[in-house]
Image (tube, rainbow, N blue to C red; front, top):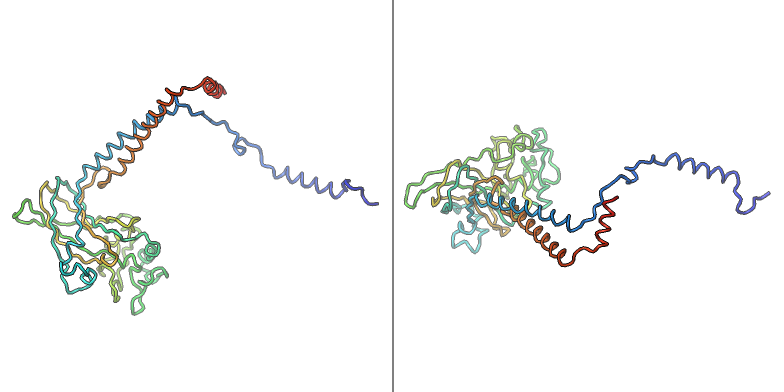
Length: 355
């Protein structure tokens, strides 16, 4: 006999029972944490609470910012752009032809004046502008495995192209565009305590300028340059084939790619004190081709402070934040005086605290 509409048969009842049992079995155990029912502090922000907090933040941030600015101002820095100064006058209209002509002497001498006393150590940097080391194709054009392990000298990925193999088919070590474009301008320094006095050469120390982790882990002690800059198109500096990569610190510094198109990289340091008014004669070998991409080059001499080099951004950020907090605290105070809190607001605050 067929079942009446709306009546559930034995099979339907069993399905419902099975579904109910499955639901009970899969139901998670109740806990206040999983159900987000833990007791929590939910304060109602009132002017009496916000104003002291803003004033306290301003009171703390402004002295910190002023201290950071003072520390930055103690750093003595000398910057000199030489990419145009070192080009002969008759070649200024075609700088690319000048830098690519190997028969032209690229040596020039510039004179720097020390503005204030500079205490040792004095760090020397080279600065490049409009050089995009952060370009994805450029940054990935390297083989870290090859730099570290001599057995992986031929382990060159496709990212190293076009600087992966030499003309004879043997691998280039180190490969890739990052190493190929190694900066190769050189500087030598001589001090003159006054004009016309005898020049005293300053020794530039070029060891210890790279990261210790790079020397110990990234660049191998038994990996030597091979077929480097042997192609028809030379990108930058040469490497000593008799030294392992772990001792070629100029390469290590260069291969730590910069995040911005204007950057500085450490060239060396001078362990000597320089007095205010002293003259430095800098002999520059202007070898690096920054003219093809309209880039600029500069040499930088700088001391170091508690926060590193000269950079007032951190201190200014603290001061601006502190002043903004003070201004907001003052604005809220004026608003409370002009528009005081009503009785219902105070009752709402009291009822919340009573909970």
